[in-house]
Image (cartoon, rainbow, N blue to C red; front, side, top):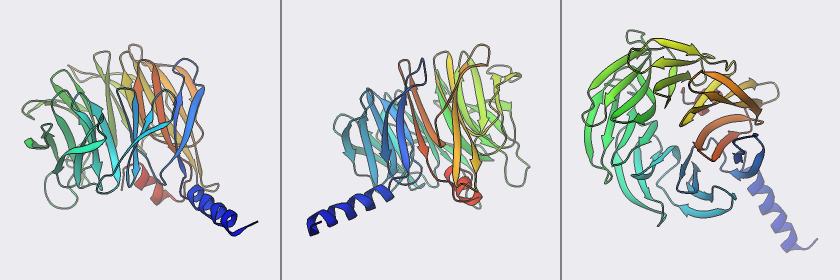
Length: 328
């Protein structure tokens, strides 16, 4: 073997070692894996926008043809993308947990940036972006609304630990876990999308961190905590049903009348996590399909004709599990 071949083998080995997560597309009818691609080392958030699957997690965003899985774009961002969302206002990322950036998908470049303070999750609407900003130490946890240029429209104090966001009609839904002291309970909050005013508060479990809206109801779940997914009445706030998703770390995505629940079970001795994704009929809250996907699910994106998921293939410790599932 010549020197050039040895160098090539070393480079291939280093590249392989740096990839321990995957993005994949599943057939929405059968759960068959249609394509699978290695992505950046560490957890990788995703968002689907106009036929492109955007994947974060490394020092940049990668764009893949959502149907074929071929890479079509790459955008340098100033740090690690820890959350992604997409909508009519474009593709937006939370970078290094301190700022957000807006991407113009067609040009694959940054067109907006905002320093929001500590940020963990994001949602994108027609002409606005909403960001969860839990307080790290002293201070008040908030949800921040931005316009498409990154200018702040409003900042609403919500207490507790705001996490997952979902937007429907004129309402932004916020999964708010209880405060560290417990004096603020877990809830799903409905904020007026234009003003940030709290218009409803639906009682939920202490560790609630995921929220999705489907069939005029709100679905809430705990990510990395309680093995609980519930359907709540969006108007009255009462619990309508529980979803049979017994594993941990539920990740939610919704599209029309379907809610997708990705969950996992850790095996720390084998440094692996086994995962499944469940198709839930939103009206009945019944699980109609369950498919195993191999490893720890990090994020899910759905459209009427597509389902994408990212997984993280190695579980080192309970501490790492907490970090990767947003609980650190």
